[in-house]
Length: 363
Image (tube, rainbow, N blue to C red; front, side, top):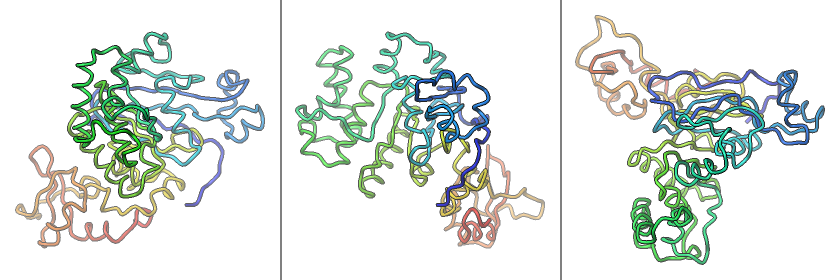
């Protein structure tokens, strides 16, 4: 993938989207700068016009997160995607102040996390927000159930109650029968399931994932991605998912932001990123993504007109194109796009074929 260098672009915030539900997490103007003069750099408006490389040369400070703003809707899977060094892992740690932000505000469920005291932060981390890391961090001398219930033990939950809860979430993540196993008896994918169960055990309102599957084999990684999707459908938790893998981002995300040099350079639904890349960098990122696997009928439909047949195949506007290929192949009639019980658009066979044949940057 070609990488373009340029001066610092304008920060991009998540656009309003009425389908995303009530805001659960709001991040505004967040900076994280490492170095002795970090606070001075954050206050100096002239630095905003410089690249991270120029700031490093001028001040000796490293800018990891730079003027980042976004909102996460309740029950949404919000994916932050970027290459190594883009700032995404630093960003997710700033959300609960595992890393202290240099400047900006993080508001979760109406509470300003950046202004919270130690007691408030402990309560947030123990009860409201859980994190799943790339490295499992399991206690080797403890059984699966004991590892899963560890957070509840730290919280002070009665042993009978925490073991009951640990058993429930262990079954939920597909580890029934392994409750008494030790970590060294488990595969990598199973260990990550234990980590996921441990995060779910405290029944948090939000889950943060920091590249949890990047060390797993491809097939196990795919299974774990499917597991996240299944769990999200079952428990409906708000999730912030960090990844360097675009395919993973497109598979999991309701909303995706792409980071580069500490900034958000593109923000939108998967079909928006693939169908309308913001610049050459984003276009390079999505170059090899098949349109039909990401774009929805809403994205490619045309307005209906009086001459359209009324008995063609009908699909919801949110249907991904590849999910209606069989119906399109079985008729000469255009597909009717339905929303709220009415026809809002039509998709002709030619549009279906174009989405299969072309890559996003060739459209």
